[in-house]
Length: 204
Image 1 (cartoon, rainbow, N blue to C red):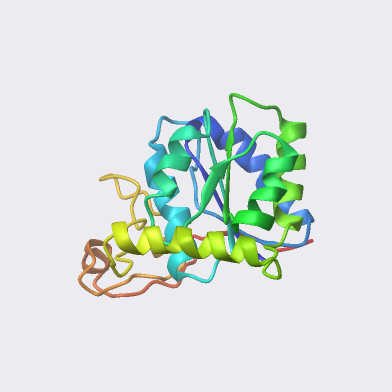
Image 2: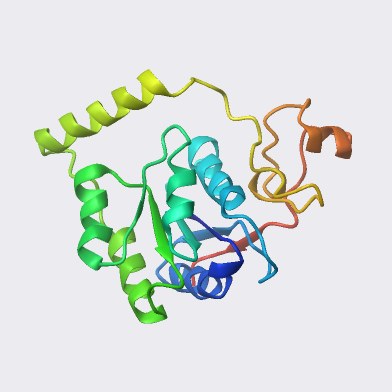
């Protein structure tokens, strides 16, 4: 499974751990930052993971910030993203099985490493129970709310840059510019890049 993972500075250390852990579980991991523990903004990384799910074929996401709350709020602003902060293993798998959650959000300042590993394992092992009519019915109602209240837009490379310094996230690192009019594409003089700077952990 393709799994995108990202964090702000508060979750950086735990993200580094979980990236390797998810790879050892046999998944392809796309590390979308942060690159270090210098102060950074969680909405940028939530957008990176959200866009990876929306338009780049990534099936699951993991987001880490200090409490897990901010990243969850930000990620859920994106169409098709169903993110939840989970600090117990029941919620981590039940959220997928009943609600088709596709982004697990963790607070690095709330729980420790061992529990984070167990949450991640439970989340990635879970599958949506599409055979249960009530779960499908409820999910469709959630999707209807999304369609009614969120503008229908095409992904526009929102995650290409974290800030004005030009720190690149998913869109550029994986050659996924949405449009030749995107600022990043203009700066590089082309609509694509080869993604050489991507951090990808292959399964071991």
